[in-house]
Length: 472
Image (tube, rainbow, N blue to C red):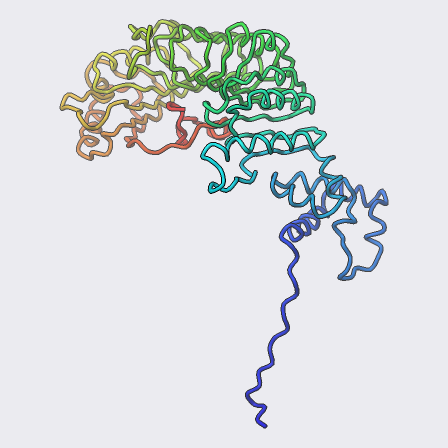
């Protein structure tokens, strides 16, 4: 017999542990340097597992102290934590003792073949209800971005009451506004542990705002939310630690008045209806006022010595809403120069000579500019040969008077035309710019990232990171 051709097969590979257990083992090994891990070992909680010789049948994960099981679960997402909990009763007990993190991006989506178009979104509301009911709290994170309130407003209002009772720390409702239907979010304002609150198309009553006691709240975002001027003042008074306030298309406000917010660093204002007044008083820490401030509103800023970034100031308004008045000038609320502002962003229609004259007048209010951003609201199609730019005004009648100007960016669809850019560069080289050393950059319109507080806070110049501030 010929044995030369016989092939001896390799032994089969050892069975792989489930992904959850593999992930947990790597986590448990990485925790060996954790002070809480060492404290548990020193206290004798791990004397048994550590003192025995290790063999293949040992289940080290289940023998970890509960404080470390809780630490492991806190590092997992919603879906991973849910899968891990079924591994053992010890993990289930640890989960109940771990602050809940509920993010609907990690919740399962029902198969589209078995449900109608809207049902996958509303079905998540039932999952959210069960999750909140099954966990005693506290709640570290409650984030919804694809769960509809449609037909479930009472359930959503019950969630808000539960979250406040369970000491929630962060609530973010960042989904499509038409899904919310003005759920009353008053209970969240009375939660002393709440640190971050972002509401989309909810409602805050005067009575609820007057009882605001969110002493730990540092970030507040209201998007298409109904709130009165009196209620906004009550909220600001009840949140003394507030560092970021973003108001996006808020209903019920004709005047926005921010007064005595002594911790506020970032203020964002986006509006699409008539707004008569934006007033900032006694904000000693305020560094940035961002949004789309239309100049038909009176903008008054006093007591903000650290304010360094302002914009976008919207000079050319593309369309007026019912009852809205076109701006007649630019000094309605900016009569006194703002010497602290170093970075300014302006939206203007370059083809409008009248608007360009307003821009040059506006610049008188910011004599200490170092960086200037222009974004054109013109479209390349239809631009005629009399297309007016900052370059023309620098050369002719209105030299920019910022003696310390270091950088100017001009964004326009026309910047994609090399001949036009060359003409503007030639005009600037012949201009009477007070700061002759200023760098001028021409840039085409490009896709921008969505606005986030974290995103702009990470930038020294909020208009220089490709973030969509004007159209947020």
